Image (cartoon, rainbow, N blue to C red):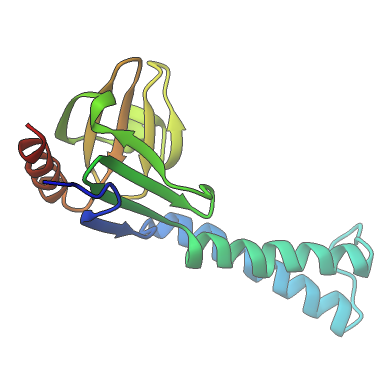
Length: 173
């Protein structure tokens, strides 16, 4: 049986769900919008030592528009179980999928963990043990033991990913 390496067995897409992240991003955006309206539109200085209008507009574009859009609209973790391995993409930071091929995975298992305790938070992380984490939200994940490193990937349905990986492994034997 010929197996196509791009055949997706299971796909999961995670978006940020941390209320604190939303609060921080939207608070920074609100401050930038307030500063722009106050100084550029109303002509009143924003702060004790106001920046020029051009600098304020630049910061408004970056932190009032671009940063919230990137963080809240386009940031997501995509996990795909394929015939030849597990593929992940943390958009917009990864331009291409990161591949964890079955031939390089020594062991994999579902785990429950604390992103704060194990990695110090969410996002792309490396802890003091040298473990790499791709963490979007939640406390469930899968742990991949590779030849030289351990990788933790957060997931909504770890059992589905494991089921898909197991099915592919059985087909390959």
